[in-house]
Image 1 (cartoon, rainbow, N blue to C red):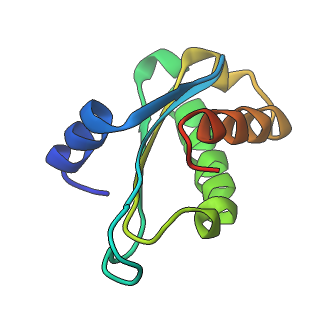
Image 2: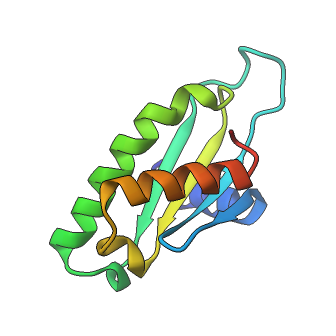
Image 3: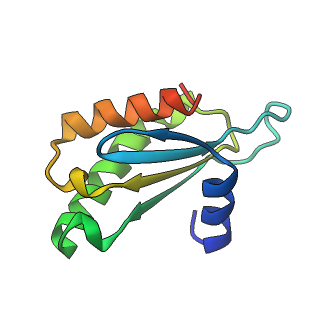
Length: 109
């Protein structure tokens, strides 16, 4: 996901799954199989998370974790993962647990 309108649509219309380190917004494609196109994922990591180094590290970790979970989502779905300030101090395993729980809460797993 690259444009602001896609992010806004997903965050407003998507099902929300919150955890202490992150929040997911998920819009599942419920159309006919094969008509949805690729699954889109976007990340929001604000300055509240920390310095540029911390924000980029969190983005890299989340990107890696989402890459492993894309197969579980229907084609054409949209996901926005918003990191919270607690994400900067969390380890990769904690982020993985919270991402799985947030996706499950949003109905994506």
